[in-house]
Length: 116
Image (cartoon, rainbow, N blue to C red):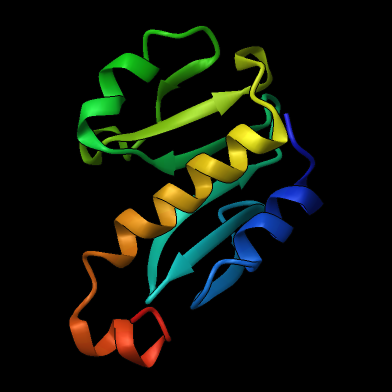
């Protein structure tokens, strides 16, 4: 599991992001006002993010990866330390989550955020 500071560094480096701490101390990253990644620090620290529809079923069959509470219907997963993800794994999935959410924004908003 990556640290909170590493999670925040990865997400902050993505274009057009904003960061808030909410829901009892969770680190929440958004692009265009839409959430793409969350790291909680509760009893079982985990990172949740959006994945492509075709990856969702495969990922949720792996140890340490579960449907994200409240967000599973939108194909979000929650990854705990048990999954054994490396920093590179998290960076790839968080970058992909950012792209998936950014793609749903209006063309004007993407341009305003410098997302092309």
